[in-house]
Length: 339
Length: 241
Image (cartoon, rainbow over all chains, first blue to last red):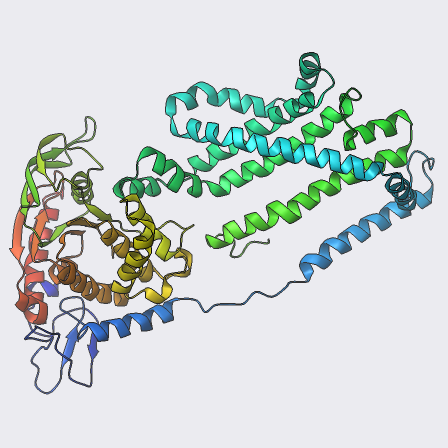
C-alpha cells in the first residue's frame, strides 16, 4: 500500500480503479445516498472503498458481462479420424514387416509362420468352433472373476485407506501380494480345489484383488486435504464422507487400480489355463495355447497369442478408454494431453 | 450473542502461542472484518470458531448448530456440477430430494448463476467458482458464516463486484459474517466493525466501527483506511530486529 495513502484524505485519494459513469446512478431501494464524491459536475465511483455498483439490476448485468468475458466459448468436438487411421496404419506396417521377415526365409516356416498361415489357422479354428468357444470361455471367466474381485476389493480398500491402524497392519502385506506373481498360487489351488473352475477363479482373485485395493488406496492418498475439510464443515458423517466425498474424489486413482486389476485378472487367467488343463476346466484361450504347444503347431500358438492380445486391446478401447476419458474430461484434467 | 471469545489461546505443540488472550463478541447479524498481517493466526481463529481446531485455553461460545465456512480457494468438488455442489451441502444437512433441487436453484439465482448451474467447476471463472462456493455455504443454512480470505485470489475487477454482491446477500439473508482478510481496504469496504489482530501472538489490539457514511463517501473511507493501515504497520514494525 502506498505510503502517501496514510495521510491523504482528499476525496479523490482512493487508489482503486475509478470508473466514470455518464448517467447518474440509480439509488438502491431504501437507501438515501449513492456513491458520489461531490466533485462538481461529475459522478465518480470508488470501487474497493465504497459501493461501486448502483443497485441490484446493475450488479447482475455487470456480473453477467464479466462471466461471459471470463468463460471459454464452448468448442464442439468433431470426430478425429487420426484416432482410427493411425493405429490401423501402425498395425498394417507391423504385419508387412512380419511378412517381409518371413519371406527372407531365415527360419523354417513351421517355426515362424507368416501372417497368411496364421490367418488360415484362424479360419480352421473358426470353422470347427473352437476359436469362439475359447474366447467366450476365457472372456466370461475373466470378466466374472474381475467383477467379483471389484466387489471384494472396494470395501477392503476404502476401509484400509480410512482406518490408520488397519492400513499400517495390512498395507505391506497387500503391496507384497501385488508383487507376488499370481501363477505362484496355481499349484496350491490345484491341490485345494482340483482341476475345477474354482482353481481358475482363485488364481484370478489373488491377482486382481490386491491390485484394485492398492489402486484405491493410492487414489485416496492423492485427494487434496481441502476436500475432507469441506466435508467436515458440511457436516458429513464418517460413512457419508467415505461414499459422497472420498470415493468420487479418489475415482481417477481407483480407475487406474481397476485397469491394472483387469490386466492382472486376464494374465492370471491365462497362466492358470495354461497350467491347469483337463478335469472340469473348460477350453479357454490358455488351453488353446497349451494345445498348440502339445501339437507343436506354431500357427495355433500364434493364433492364441493374437487372440489374447486382441481381447486385451478391445477391453481397453471399448471399456476403460472411454470411461477414463469421460471421467478426466469432466474434471477438466485432459486439456493439453496427447490422448 | 452468536459468538463470544473469552481469553482464547492456541499453541501448536511446544511452539510459541499462535493466539493469546483473544477477546471478542460478535452480535447476531453483524458483519465483522478480522484484519491482520500474515502469521497473526487469523485463519487459526476462524478454524477454531468453525470447530476444525480446538483452542488450548480460554472459552468459546458459538451457535450450537455450528458455522458455515467459505475457503480462499472455492474448494468445489470437480466431479459435481455447480448445482450438484450446492445440492450436496443440502443433502448432508438432510434436505429431501425434491426440495434440494428447488433450493439449490434459488441459491444459485441469488448469486446470479442460474444459467451456469449445469457447468462443472473447471468451466467456471474464479469469480464464478467463489459465487458457487458462497451459494454452497448459504445452503448450509447456519446463522454464522465464516469466510477465510474468500476473494484474495481474484482479480481486482471481480473482487470489487463480489464486495457489492456479498454486501447485498448479507443484507438479504441477515447472516452473521466473520470475514478474515489482510486487505485493509477490503475490511473497510465490507465490515461494520474491523478488528485488528496483532501478530505472534495474535490478539485483538484495536477495533473500529464503519458507518453507512463510509460506504458512500470515498474520502471518509480513505481516511479510515489510512488510520487502520498506520496502526497495522505499527504492529508489523514491532517485529523488526
